[in-house]
Image (tube, rainbow, N blue to C red):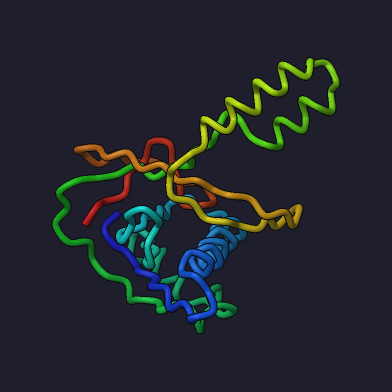
Length: 182
């Protein structure tokens, strides 16, 4: 991974930056999924409490050049400034960007209730644990292309001292491969 592209969010006053970031991230996911690309990783270089206003894509020059030559971003181009493919500067550290999932969720609670094999006390205890285990990681609200349901994708960022090569999923995430931090 020697190159990158920055996608800078230009949210109108009526929309929150995170909402436009969700649309942008969904467009990236759609492109990666439909083209079966597993060598583009994502990062959020302006991340603080939320993900910030920049989505960075990391890959090789040819893959990124091919991506920006297509119209995959056309539907939201008014809200996103697409940078040029650039060479990654000197890197001091690396990061694994992955999905963080809660082991307790409202959908799991509904399934437990539907089965009918749990007592009311068990279900109340699950609700209390679920309320206590709320994730504080940055997230995006996304729409599932298959079900149309909105869901929350939480992100986890693990700093590592060296580069780890590997594949990325259709969301640009990996459990082990790193992206450079700069």
